[in-house]
Image (cartoon, rainbow, N blue to C red):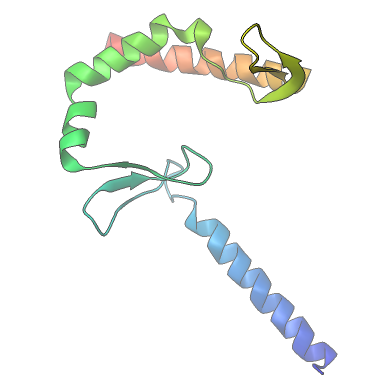
Length: 130
């Protein structure tokens, strides 16, 4: 059986390991972390909860071409009212097709979502004015 000192040392080691694992998901510049995969693709972490968004060179060239970036900015700005910026939860209802229906989780989430919508709108407008 482990002594109290051994257990405390193990707890401290686990705390350090946990902190190191949490730091892996953060980029020093505060932006989404990226890496080049073993297969030669760019993986961007933190967009989805578990899995990275992965693009190969040809896809990167298409997605980040100046024309596509402008088109994506314009499309997002034109459709910003349709975009969801709040965490939604099932409300127990069904729509006319039998699909689950959702609602914002709290009034605070709605307020955060609207603030984020305004921030995204300002960013998109600034991108398009360049």
